[in-house]
Length: 104
Image 1 (cartoon, helix red, strand yellow):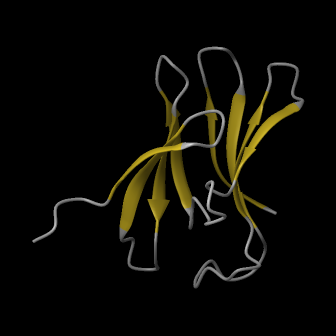
Image 2 (cartoon, rainbow, N blue to C red; image 1 turned 60 degrees about the vertical axis):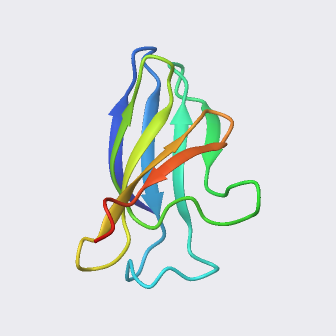
């Protein structure tokens, strides 16, 4: 696995973005694109990878941040041209929203 991003939230939990070895794009069905939350004891608490419908939440995790309610915000790159979006998910893996920018 390749470490892509790391963040420590207010509760001292470590949140990392990971992907499998090999070229980052295109994202295949077998590609592993995860955000993992480790507790302050460094034990894995939550793995975020799929939404409720089984679709991948992330393509290439570039940055990770959290808010005061520990909603996880990910800057997600979609291709080699750095087109991307913001993905917000709660700790249960429920997609809160995605923001792709303004459509022109």
